[in-house]
Length: 346
Image 1 (spheres, rainbow, N blue to C red):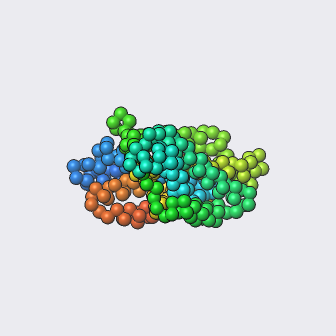
Image 2 (cartoon, rainbow, N blue to C red):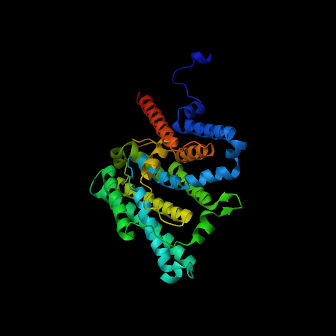
Image 3 (cartoon, helix red, strand yellow):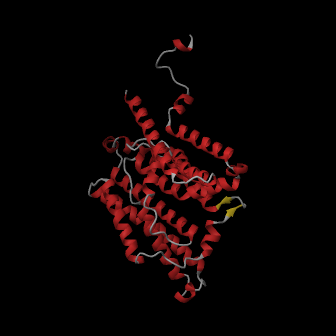
């Protein structure tokens, strides 16, 4: 029997299924961008190991919050407050570090007799405050049965306002440079930035949980149909609560990355973090409508803006064009997702 005579319902090769996924084509796009920028950059500097790891370092913070957003989108939820969560967590962590590292006079002159205990305490504060922020979102969504869009839109304002009240609108000063030198700028084996290695391990764990465990299966099942998931015995509210706490903890981790990279807080930034995280997830193949998620695709989706920004800077082109390109890519990714859903519904 010739291929043209094969029955319509014959099993298809897995490669043809791969060709229909958004994450596959976004991975092709990422490799294409790397190839183009490597070819046209002066002395092929873009393809240097040092530059590629710098791109990964620039994307590390977005990868963390996009990973959490992927879980929420898979369960048909979202969190618009991750940017405010990062600001508030970084402020509380910075305040803790400067309060415990020494007396005010010692800290002012850069003398930190209790440096590492203070940094450890600051990290704990960042993760706990981020988790509590996420728990508040989760409680409002699950107990009051409010839309996650409206709840997290409101807590975005509350979180930012709280950070501004604590700091009186000024960044936390005198955060130790040792945090920057010994963590953010440190390279394992002289090559891999330590933050990139840590974020990579976190992503592998989150991929495994999403793809191979009951927790991941429940997340996708809730996104496909919360009613059916409830009838199957899944405690939907408790699971959604856990997802919001997890996303908050990841935002706390992003806050520590933030203050360690720049040795200060950034209370005027992070206003577009939530949209960037949603864009990275959608670009990578996670559906806005729940039930479909790809952790590998999310990492690819977070790397594309970083590659564009770095490549355009090397080519001395205004990096603002990156925003236009990412917007166009999001539209393409959503169109592919819609087409796949229509095909599966037929």
